[in-house]
Length: 257
Image (cartoon, rainbow, N blue to C red):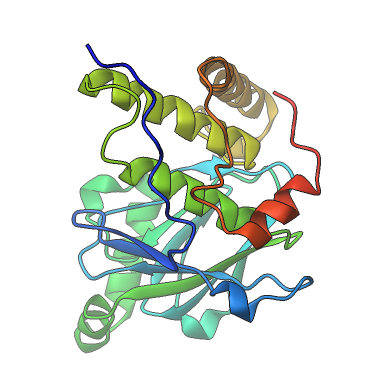
């Protein structure tokens, strides 16, 4: 049984990450040469035609997020309210702590929640067949950025997708490699201010629902993150992250678990 630690694949030079169908998505980042010490450009997210991927319901505690569609149409849900955005609608604002999710406007209806499905059906009724078919034939391309614009969004995506794309981690036993991936991803999400809605109690309504939902998420993710740290996982790996972003990250004390 081989359990030796294998080196990570170096991806810090990559300007984009692609996931094949059914995810069918590409994340692109500005090259380091286009960045100075004060400016962070938006991440470009391309949901290709036929993509069934969503961002999953999640929230942030230290960042306000913005999503601006530049091509195609997106179904964006923020705090239980769903709306379809195109380039003419400007940026969707996601406040801190707001539960949110977004995807292609034509994601299969069986993969949508009730409110999302109703929004999709209303949009299809209100727009002509020609316009709908045109949108279906376009990639959904959107810019995503945060306030503060501290580079953490790009660090998150780079480490998340690099982890997911690793062919094998620390063992020749596939189940152990997948467990390590899960723990590594939990460390990335926890320290990069991304909290998944693991069980939907309707936390977007606030009150006890939000408290129970948050308690469940923090407990499960916190335990996995702690186990990951014990196993040597790190949220930010030099093999995955360009030097200028590593320097930004190291200039701010990491969040305690």
